[in-house]
Amino acid sequence: MLRGWLFLRSVGVGFALWALYTGLEPGDGWVGLPVAFGFALLVAWRRTGPWWLRVWPLPGFALYFLAQSLATGLHVARLALSPRSAWQPGWLELPSRLPEGPPRALFANLVSLLPGTLCGDLDRHGVHHIHLLQTQRDPEPSLRALERRVGCLYGCVPRKGGAS
Image 1: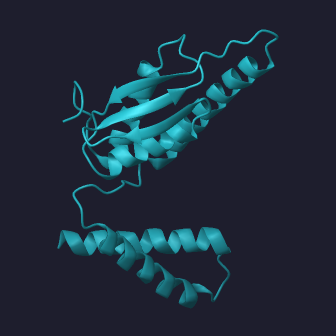
Image 2: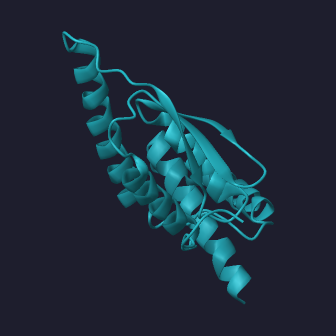
Image 3: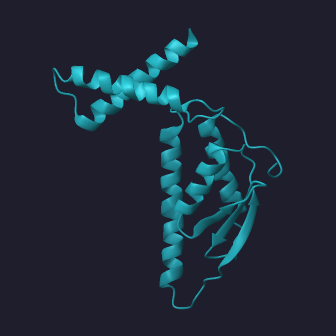
């Protein structure tokens, strides 16, 4: 019974996304319903692993990530425009506290989207090798905060300690 509700919820989300994207005009629902059912089938097909993205935390996460991107972008711009060079590039090895699979991959990709950082590798032991433009300040607290937020998106709590 629960699977039916999840499928119907996916149909509703698919229809809402279609309506937001195209602008819902009277009489256009007959086009949106097949699109919504296709979206729901795609979601059901992609939901084969133990981890799948939750929809409800996405708006808060998007605002958090936008604020982090803006703050780090301003910091990198200040470093670039300063009269004396403050660049101190280097590498950070950050053992992942997230489970294997999509949560770790999303975290690595999001780190690469933040200005001044690049996730160069995620090794088989679950260690993120992150390149930083400035190593003077400790980036681990902000990276761990991002990791916790990614864990919330997937409904998992990052473990204490390192990767397994």
